[in-house]
Picture (cartoon, one colour):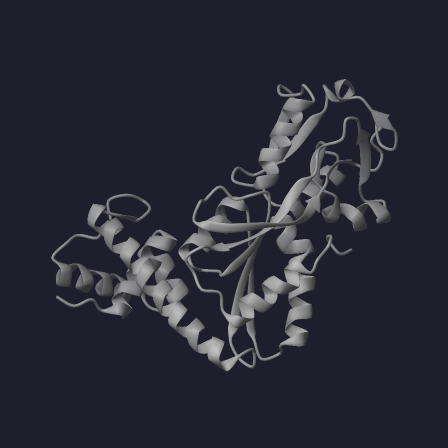
Length: 298
């Protein structure tokens, strides 16, 4: 019995994207071709690997076992490339970095631009998602390094603190509470807009509302930092958000700050990578760049 690595990779993509059509689109293949490759893999292993009964394709018990080994196989292949890159130095190579929404939008593009300017031969990519997504990308080997707001809980990750980030309460520019010290009790009648489930910011927003005694206030869910800012600016409600996400908006008068006391505590900004994965020369160099940051550069 032999494993076909091409079919194995296609099988992983079907699981990753939850269906044959979605995987085919990502792989630039036809849907029948993707389905046929998975069927051939199942035939060679004499096992059903994919449950096709639901709206979203899922792995069977046998498929889960194979997927775990497949991820390890491709991770080992990446390490082989990394080992060769270590011999070659920083003239060539690639780096895949991820960041949670605020960090990935307002910090990493600037740092990655500095890195690329210094090492122009390195291919690079940047992915942005919420905390759960970024942790999953790290564990699955889709990215080698990630910068996150808050500590990811996965024990497989090596995590180091970089600096801190403050949350601020934002409102529409004409909000009557803007621009003066406010006691949390004065916010009881307000509506608070929260980030989507899975976001590290969402967890902190809920924790802070509870600390202020506002656990029962009206709330609404908004996906993404930029959408959240637009909703607050339009008068839909208040929100807690990173100070770095609203610096320009406040300066331009598009948003206002409410000075709540006690203020929310700072949250850590951390860099993480898998403990069992060898960092490439490019990743090691980018990690050194991150470690040189004494604070979040403005």
